[in-house]
Length: 88
Image (cartoon, rainbow, N blue to C red; front, side):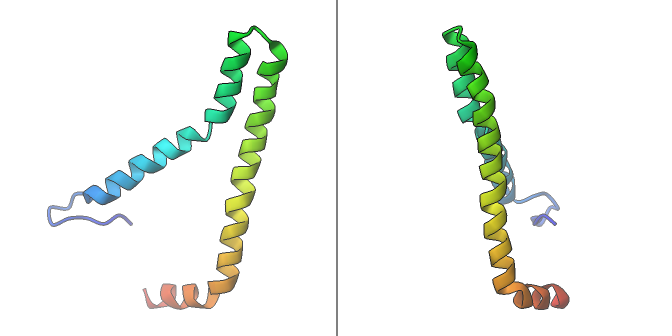
């Protein structure tokens, strides 16, 4: 649920957070794109294929690290979260 102002429109802070999240999501492709650009500039097939490995490694890291952090936070605060949701 998004916060609304008095006119029923999304607040500027919410809109800013959405735009920041969109830019951050696009930046996750930057390492692989850089390697692919180097491979294309140098006409080197091996470097271009290394871009695929970089993409897989980046995606794996961005799936595992925040997932583990979220899991540990949920385990540590599960009772408080459930209590908050029940009161809502």
